[in-house]
Length: 306
Image 1: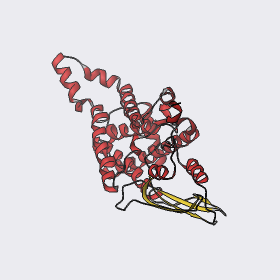
Image 2 (image 1 turned 45 degrees about the horizontal axis):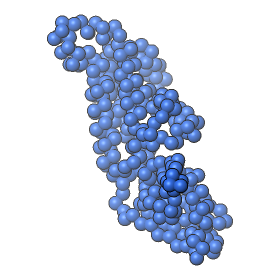
Image 3 (image 1 turned 60 degrees about the horizontal axis):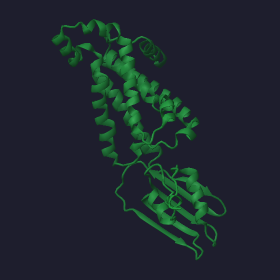
């Protein structure tokens, strides 16, 4: 059985979920796990494209997960290990009625036949639990408005689909496989951040006037925070070196305006070298930062005093 065949089986489950487990070997379960994760990330990529298309509408929403950095290993613990265990026990473990001890207790105390209802409406129940799992990730964002709720199916679309895939793992392979699938999902995200974003230098500008390159830090590093810059008598930048430094603090060091507030609390490594003796104006440097980073819309406090 190949990848396409396993994805077709997963699609059959998505259309009509059931809780009859597969009587297959561990190796076959591993294949289903890998196929499900591939399918999961395929849909995540599509939602990433959709989010890029609506980025002008969503760039004002702050993701609280970007406000504090942790070391690589602490991120593994806090993102890859702890949340999957907790979330799978909340959103997937109860899907099997025999393991839904709260409902079984209620059924026993009040002499109710909840099991028949549960099995009859399992399809809707799986959808509800998957939707709850997806939409609970809306709490990752702050300063929401009406548009946020309208766009939320796209913003958390990847988590909505992942909830269905993890439900497949739980009901058809077993609960431990749902946890392993969730582990794998989050671990891949961590590794992608480590390999493709963390401390990866990207040129922001490289022309006849200046060379500017920067690297974002996805994890806390044990390096001294350094900011050093030289200017001309006119205040233009000749060179600037920021190491493990808050981008917000960098902006605050160069500009006095209280309206220049960044959306995310980013730590960066940044190098600027002017290729002209006259230096690179701070205004042009600010325009470069605004082109590559998201600034909040902040009302100038001095206007309110007038």
